[in-house]
Structures are given as structure tokens and as C-alpha cells.
Amino acid sequence: MPTPDQSRQNGLALSSDWRRLVGKWASGHHRPFEADTASLTVDVAHPAAQRDITLTFTTTSNGLLLLLATDDRYLADDQIALAAAAANAWNVERLVPMLSVCNLGGTARPYLAGVRTMPLACEMTQPAFQTMADQWVEDARALFTWCHKECGL
Image (cartoon, rainbow, N blue to C red; front, side):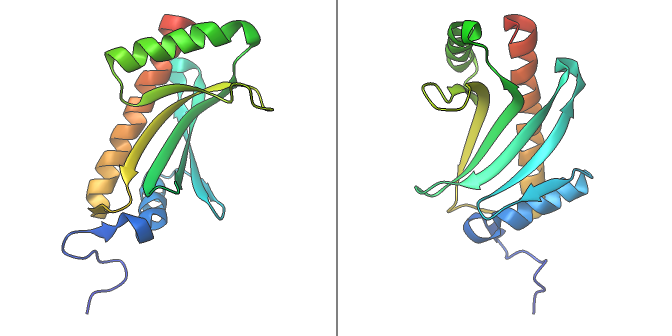
């Protein structure tokens, strides 16, 4: 009989095991993570852009695993138009991860975020998830390096 740590032949169900997959991935890189009832948050250093990146994993009501990558900086009022233009340019040229200006018109200050999604109906082995999550980190680093170096954000 398989142990709880062994995956099924096709992998672990993302819908029920995403927290375990994320937690093991973060622990394997010696990255501390915080969990609450709705999400897991992992901080990743990014010295090239002189900031840290925060990865927040959560689920959506329409059946997706959502990764929101932020650099924990808010946009000043005079940066919003530049940030919107940067998001448009990034999304047209590269698209992955999708760059968004979040919280426009909200009560909190606006910020940049990279967004990745994956259907919760997927199954993944731990090694496959780790490979994917490592790629998502590299994609987030590339996004925020570009925002910092090319756009001054």
C-alpha cells in the first residue's frame, strides 16, 4: 500500500495536494513559507533587481491554482501610466508570466504582479511540480529585472 508521500501513478491531484506540493518545493530550497487558510506565501531573494519577490499560491473559485508574484513595492501615482505601458509591452512581447497592475481604484496602493495559473484538475508528481515552480521563479525574476532595468519600476 502506498504511503501518503508516494504519488499515484499519474501524480498528485493539484486540487487536493497543492499545499503539500508547494510546501515540499519551498522546504527543498530551504525557503521559509507562511500558510493561512487560503494561501501559501514564499519569499525569494532577487538581488539583480535589488528586491525580494513574494510568491503567493492560492486557488480561485473557477478551479485554478493561482501564483501571484510581487516585488513588495507599491507604485507611486506618477508611475501608474508607465507601469500600465510596461504591462502592455511585456504581455505583447512575452506574456508569461502575465504582468498586471493590481489595485487600481482600490483602497490599497497599486502594485505590479506577475500572474501564472494552472488548472486544479491537473495531476503532478513532486519532481514535475518542483521543476515547474523553479521555472516560475526564474520567470518572475526575469519579469521584475525587466521592470526594474528597462522601465525604472
